Length: 155
Image (tube, rainbow, N blue to C red; front, side, top):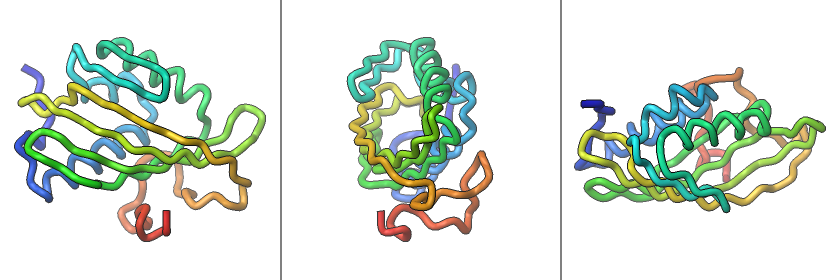
């Protein structure tokens, strides 16, 4: 059976760890790898898109990272219970015309006993920004440990 520690029930520390692992995964922009963090029958709502299983989640992510270029994400724990975590996040990206955006969002996550995410409900808003207004400037991939988080950046 697949397992993705840390497992529920979450503590404050394991919830923070789970959030950072999710951030790190999404910053790889490797849709196949990221999709393995979700149950086979995962359910998502992402803006107006609904996903009903892991294969659809992977296809969604592949399309997302074709559209959202130079994607960089920061997630922050908002709240947690035994098997649920709420996060707020922001990510920066540009389209194929060079228009930059900072997307702000909130997600509600529900986990199976094996630590895979069963449900993901996301609400997201896009703010056009200039290239000079970018705050997420680390090299593509994992956010460095010394890079400020959302609260530290005033976001």
